[in-house]
Image 1 (cartoon, helix red, strand yellow):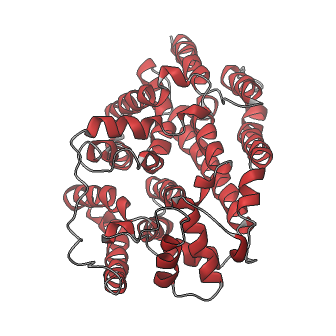
Image 2 (cartoon, one colour):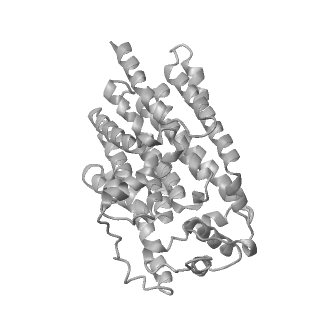
Image 3 (cartoon, rainbow, N blue to C red):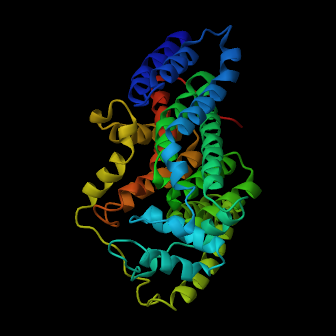
Amino acid sequence: MRVKKIDATKLAALPLLVLGILNAQGGFLVFGFCLLVILAPHIRQKIIQRAAIGVIIMAFLTGAWVAGGPVRAFLSRDLPLYTYNNDWGVLYKTYLLLEADFNYYDAYRTAQLGRFDQPLVPGDIWGWRLPTLFFLWQMLPGTSGISIYILYLTLASSVLYVAYLIGVRYLGPNLGILSPYLLFPYLYFGARDQIILATEWWSMFLFIIGLFFLISRRYFWAIIFLSLTVLVREVYVLPLVLMSVYALFRRRRMLAVFAIPMIAFSVLYLFHIIWTSHYIDAWGTLTAARVLESGWFFVQQTLAFASWEYLFVNFRPFLIFLGLATLGLACLFIRKRGEEAIIWAAAALSFPLAFLRFGTVPYNDYWGIIYVPQVLILTPLALLAFGGGEPPKK
């Protein structure tokens, strides 16, 4: 009976493999390898499993480096020769000005005014990025952005490995490869486009690693990474608040894991408001929420972002994956892993629900980076409905 359940689960995994094919050279090779891993017989599977995630990471690094030539050229420009007219150009110009010993807020304002078309300083506090990420970039060796690119590849590879560990935790070694496999094309896009500089990528990396430490009950490292997450991008306060509410009523020993990052964020944001008050009415715009009337349209935009990296983009795969991830979390809850299901729900599902009301159309489609990677990691959990998966760890 158990053999039949495993076979049914592997059979159900095949549509996920197909929907996750990378829309680039080498996509079918990665697909074939992961198919081999999932269908591997019991006798040989251990050898394949050990190599599986290494192959995916190497495929990612190779493909990203080949496709990322234009991005590396962009990140190699010197300040006097640098022209731009998009948000990513503003972020890189800010970094270059910091390297030239500018104050961060002066640098950010100067960069905003340096667009060759429509120079404009954000008029509300939410348009000013927190300085944390730029300070972290400054710690990298060199004065060009190549170090930023290498750091992106390093963090992306780390998240692919963490995604594999998460998949193995819930589905076992064979099916666990699906989580990094589905995530691969999404991270590949970031490595070949100027949007690599978006703060959402970097906060998402930190958030996923922090979540893995959290469910693994390595609370010290969870606090470090979750703190860095909200210090880079403030929107992650939302899931941390939801998790802290759960901890307050059900697991008070975990409360410090969420309280410490929120305290650190509150201190930083207070100073952020004080500094931006020299340039705009920061206090007056603090409650200026970007309310939407067409929230579902915005959610669809965030679900469409980067989906072009998947071969079957016309099937709207991320909308399918969102439904499957929700089903998977329900199965995880039924499997007596309710606490982890709640944590993941707060991490992945709270954002599309919030985006039904808040956001900016059509410019913030890249906000999908904030939650879609978590959805991609959790999508294979829908296979728990077919009876497969690992038993709960005590």
